[in-house]
Image (cartoon, rainbow, N blue to C red; front, side):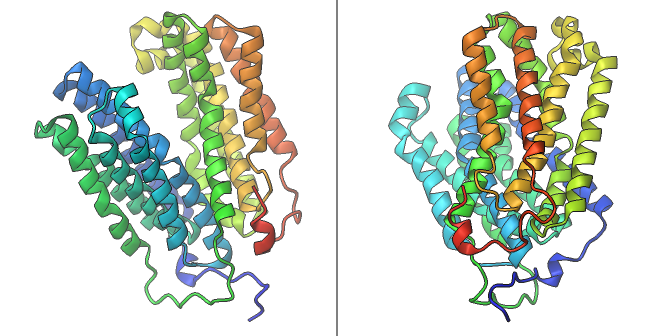
Length: 417
């Protein structure tokens, strides 16, 4: 075998149940994940006192932040698997999980003092975070191998492990610490179960000459994932600083529409990523078309029923803001397209793949600092302008057919950021 030639993924990863069934399965899994995530605070509001509810919400937020590198790891593993087949990434996965969990443990004194959390909570959160990051490797292999039905099952299993114990603890009246302990225990079971799910039967041993996943590729995936979150949440954080309490609350309700338009079509990016990693240009076109079409439908729907959208998102007190619904939806729809293009850049091994998103976030902060909008429409127009410019830059700088080779030289990959 020529060591410079990219290895083809194992055939088990190329079997396809059909994109329709795969898309439906991944979509349903995503709904389950989000549903369980929403169920926890809804249930906690009925089982804990206000202080405990606030602490639990804070704890879940800390896990979400600390687990971001796991999403980047999944992205990097999926791209590498799609190009070269399975390789041993266990060490990199363990190091990433140790860094994420260790950071929470090291920050225990600060978290306890600043956020008024019980002293044992950060350690429990570290266990959950480590489990989520370790599980991301298996999800990446399933995604990169295009085993989407198993990917959907893996997403559902991880969500059950991550939130199921917390739900059980709340139902049993275990309180804040007891519920988080139950959640940590069930989450700790997930990595082994997902590793078994991702194991390809009869898989040939990995050839030593094949390229290995590098730390730089994982860092690139983490940077891309973090950039997605920062640029899409920057306006919400700015609203907290710039708008009066009533205005920031109204803006928070509007961002529910933005996030809906952002995440609703993400199944297209999930299904397209392995093909993008193998240089399939048609997949990028289809993914962009599906994502843009979904965004257009949501923008039109919010134009026709903006008042109803705000009523469902925040209650009757916010119905009068319905005229802004199409703008909020447009922000999310634009970023959804930008994220498809970002996945394509990461799949191509583009250096500084997330740079336009970081620049967009910095630009929004700069404009807000200069103009200092004090109304919902003022900040919303700044956010919409940022989303438009960022997406256009991502589109203009997108790789052209043949601009990136299917195989990335390991030495050059290690220099990419």
